[in-house]
Image (cartoon, rainbow, N blue to C red; front, side, top):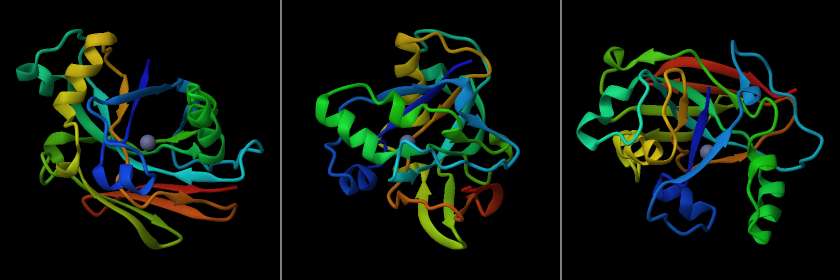
Amino acid sequence: MKIFCIGRNYTEHAKELNNPLPSEPLVFMKPPTALVVNNKPFFYPDFSSDLHYEGEIVLRICKNGRSVQPEFAARYYDAVAFGIDFTARDVQDKLKQKGHPWEIAKAFDRSAPLSAFVPLDQLENPAAIRFQMKKNGQVVQDGNTRDLIFTFDTLIVHLSKYFTLQKGDYVFTGTPAGVGPVQVGDVLEGFIEDKHLITCAIK
Ligand code: ZN
């Protein structure tokens, strides 16, 4: 299975990191060994001293496909989860300066805690999904998928030009503004439409 991730997909987040807005989706991947499920803790890695959370809506791919046409894109995902795209920001900044790939800053072991999935038809508004990240009980990210630069359907079309989508793949669709560092002892919680979906303690 593949875990696709999209960078800079919310205008306010691109601005907070002083990144230009992308003209097409910025794609990277994480391996299956990045996943953390069942609310297991996250262990702060020893290669970073500026580890950031990024709370994201994650799509579940439900059908194999390649070169998907826009009018059929919505058939290829059926559920969403709350995911955390942990990023070693200090490592990433060094890689970006050199123009190198981001993998070791983004795709390391356990860098992708993921909640259970909620079927799209159980959401109040699948076209405008509200989601929140809390850190130690305080809201730090408050997003809505209506603010995506590239919609879910656009991402499906784009990804499937280059990669065969396979049932069981995931797509981290990007983080809204409010990313920030975590310390050992912090607790992150993710909510979709006020439903508590994930707890992630930093150990
Ligand atoms: Zn991200």
